[in-house]
Amino acid sequence: MRLLAAASMVALITVVVAAQAPSKAGPSKTTAAASAGKPAGTLAQVMRGIYFPNANLIFDVQQNDPAAPKKKVEGTGSSTDTYAAAYTGWEVVENAAVALTDGVDLILQPGRTCQNGKPVPLTQPDFQRFARQMREAGRVALQAARTKNQEKVSDATNNIAEACSNCHEIYRDKGPADSPARCTPPAKTQP
Image (cartoon, rainbow, N blue to C red; front, top):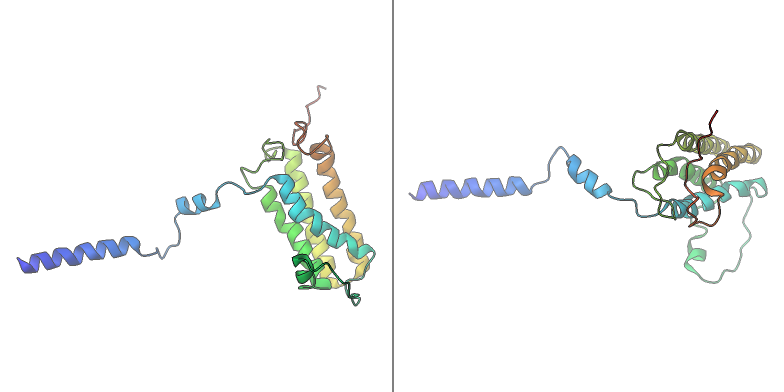
């Protein structure tokens, strides 16, 4: 009887341990999908947090050589000042180009909304085309930044400006950020 009880206890412990042990195959699809969840921010927040600052870092190359020594500027002592020089020179430009390129995946993340609460128009062919243009503009800027050539990066800013403008003209430039007209696909015209 003791042998049977001991065998039952070992079997029970084995089942519990196996159930709690991480899978060698990695997380299940259900777990991965649940952890991905709903995007944290609106499209406007992605634009303001990623695209606006990083595009401007690249646009700055038109006027300022990233390789030139930086002048020491006394700041206000903010945390922004503390970390402003963590990365410098061409590395900043390369990082910004990567943010524009890979940030497209955030723009296209299902479930993201615009500031006005409308879903991002992910299924619109023109919106998808604009996203592809931005990814390509980011890649061109990254290739140019890797050459450490100010003129090449300045030329690449044209692609970024065009990619931004194409999408903004259709989906953004329709009043204030919370306007119901924003993120609205254009009306189809009758032939």
